[in-house]
Image (cartoon, rainbow, N blue to C red; front, side, top):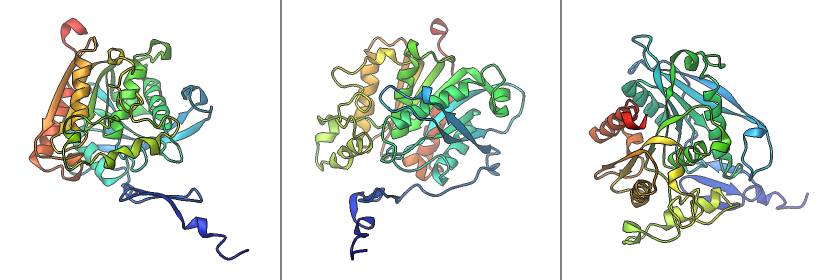
Length: 340
């Protein structure tokens, strides 16, 4: 073996600190979001959790990818039960730029314990495949498979007792933060496609600090200090097959993108944060949805003085508690009578 022949093992091909490092030999080193908190019954909230696996069949993948079958993981959350009434079902997608983190990290596990306890919902937190090993649309495919798996319990004969016994399939919601909110949006668009034949109806979607972007600056993105470079890299990195930042998956407000009138749910809550560079995109999404002809009810919440994902890092602050209260309220309201 010649000296230096193993140099590619240590040579960096791409690095984005403090998130991820990719080596020339293909090895990926994730620098954040690698911790694992086991499922448990949380002593503070009484919320129980357990981990499950979800099969993703070749038929569940989109037309843009090669057929494949695999298994993904998810964590189920069940609040402390006080009666036999069925509870809203929340399908949740974590943030992390499509390339790091999982529902099993301390911040996401703790957040879901708090939200499930406050909202009294059953939650399925999905651990989708990650880029760059599994570029977009892998995360969308896994999200769709997870919804189909959850829907397989709607008649009370699915593989998981918590969903059979406690989930109300007339009140199904999607939610996520950042890239997870992007996944929730794109999954709701798929749910609105009658050809995909989802056998449950989505009542609502809650998008928290959603990751939408675009090639042309809007609003505060154009003001100094210009921080667009902190975001511009992400979409081409996770979706090399469609790297344009105006691709409708990442910019659903772009010219020529499918109309948001096709969103497959009846209610939407968009949550933005004043100091988040993504704030103006969330605001624009809310505005474009409102004038799209979509026959639903949209609302928006802005948290003043806070940045991206602030609630995940200290859930005991009043602003974090306000956000969780707003989400809990959203998850416990039905459609107005005329829209039911």
